[in-house]
Picture 1 (tube, rainbow, N blue to C red):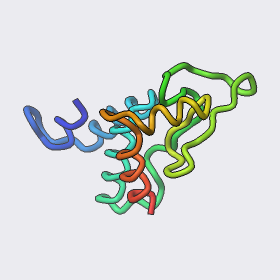
Picture 2 (spheres, helix red, strand yellow; picture 1 turned 90 degrees about the horizontal axis):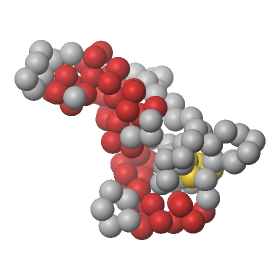
Picture 3 (tube, rainbow, N blue to C red; picture 1 turned 90 degrees about the vertical axis):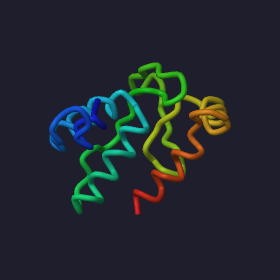
Length: 112
């Protein structure tokens, strides 16, 4: 839905509405939404990021964790996604389809 507003597909182009929808998705851990928000920030030459990831859900299992019970560790490459264990980070990195490896490269590039 955010892409429709961002690109004006089937509706009038509305970047603020698109950012709002991508923010909701990014808050839930959607890596594609995080990447898109970073791309919009670059396009708009924003010096402050629209979205800053928080340590609430494991990127692999999606389970919400409340500190200090479980410490979520950030990906050491992009610092944009978090994991509840090394095992989950390794599994997510190695997934053939929708794994973090490709997204991590994109996020690292956009973080520069």
